Image (cartoon, rainbow, N blue to C red; front, side, top):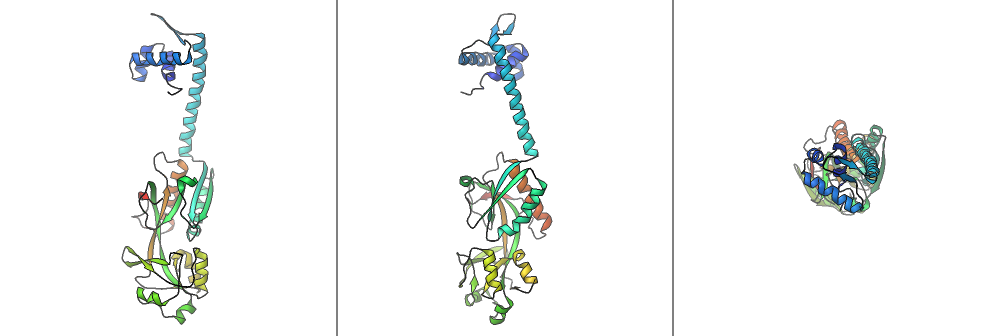
Length: 309
């Protein structure tokens, strides 16, 4: 039984001066109001109202109890007002998990821009090479990439970006550029522990291609450093390798099959009663990437779906 049960009815009776008036205000029957007040008095083991055929008055205990209930009601209204205000002017701490391989660098500017726009939100950014458990580890949301499996989590599409194959000029001079995906078997491919790349061998369709090489790392910076040193071919996001390409340290392999379009998703535990800080952050990211990256696919941005845990 709720400790507040019967109190609303009691307060309405006092304010309206009768059980009939309270019932009309609440849209319930007079008998229901009377029963709730009687149960409240029984629970408190005190009479709150003096009932006569002509008049309804508060007892001394009832008057003291009503004043306290009125104060609690006003506090509750203030609490509701605070929640409503926070939904429009979010505040608090946003705990964000990022993938360390490439995601941190790409997201840093967006997170900084959000912090400037919403200074009342404190942002905690945690990076890891693994996909965190949002619920168990207490994260508000995470950014994930590529195809997502179905689960109870919710994902909203943010944008997408291209990944290509890169190697140092010296490597391409010593090794002919692959003309076909099968030619990768003859090259030293710098990859993560899964030793596989996703490539769009067919338009709009990603194919997992096994590769081999003598350099394995989960860290994107380490892989790019190895590529710049001429050790082999690396698959890197175009934005990540752009500076090295402009400096002449890396050269992109230009083949129809050698690219991959990778989607990025904001993933969070649920959408019902979504906190303002998460809602504002996700909406901000969608707007940010749409405004700053012309190649962000409109079919992806803002799309919602289930996501992998």
